[in-house]
Image (cartoon, rainbow, N blue to C red; front, side):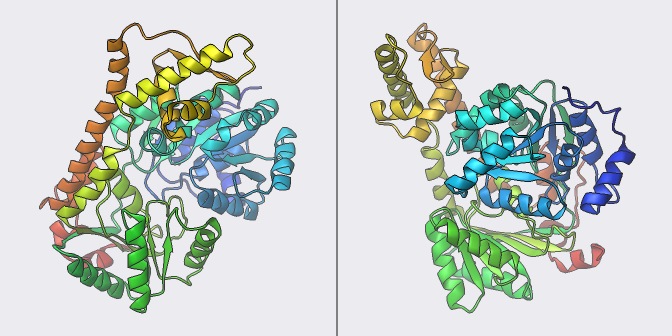
Length: 502
């Protein structure tokens, strides 16, 4: 069966259900366009700022579709938050992630095969599991949602290569319409998401990035002592309000957390090196108001629905304006004034440069993986009983499995490798030059990453309107020369508090 067309379900019907389930009485900009497009069977990219109601754009249509909506979510904490809120609205939703026990996982799989859930939340890694994909395909999928879709472009080629396999999983579940949602995306990221997910003439709904209730400011701090003084002032001026302090490294997150705790601040820490149970408890305490300031790496905050975060401070500048505004946008979701502060020190560039240096496979890595694939394919050829996997290639080449998955995606794009149950060679490269040309795509990506890092530094150093800078970076050409909510335009956040209605 096909999804209902946009003409079958009008705005009034959507609003009636939105009011009944979510207490929503009017749609925000872009929501109606996105919902009616996906109900009409069209691929959509929605670029809508934090707090603009992206989740409603798929949760509400899911109630009108005859089969499950599959939501690809990057973080377990985000998934848990969404499932709990849907349960409060009396909506059947399941999750498939590593927090489930074996018994819970088997039970959830049975429920999915029976079609009992209107929404199924999965991590991208779960869709690399052939059995999980087969279960979804068996019951049928009406819509695939890729939440925080910028991760496809920013993480897929780096530490989350499972994002590069989403295109195949979408095909295997019957190629339903795809909705990709994110808070920020440049034209290049939109093009990359379109290509990686194999979207078909997607409708782009872009409502802009401007958040007038956020006061944007940068503090030039020449040493760590000045940084600490400024951070203490930001926390003090928040008057007991909650905030997030982002660091670029796990080590700095631990050090800042210890220092703030010792200074009497109710602080918590969150990063990927802490045990899952501790991270979940820290998030619970922060959401419940038991923690005022959370010190975190980029592992924290995506999709967290805490409306009253009064400040977001960056101890070190991130790798790009995309990352910066994604993280900064977690402040002031309630529409009330909030501060977004960057503690800028030029020397911090070396941290991001270090991360960029090892981000992509090198030419010799690609050649080593390609040679290992050839040897394994030849050995498996007579019987075809031995599966050639990314893990097997990693073991044979000595490369990390994560990096091998990125290389396999590159080889698939080149048309020399195909994947089904097993990876196999389709053909040889016609020449060393052809292989080098495909490897060059990651050289271009590296250069683009360096350009984004330089743009982040220009944002920190500009004397012009910061809001205009960001809006121009994301392709908005109609931004005024003065925004009234950054330090370069009005120097103090006090005027913002008077300007934003309470």
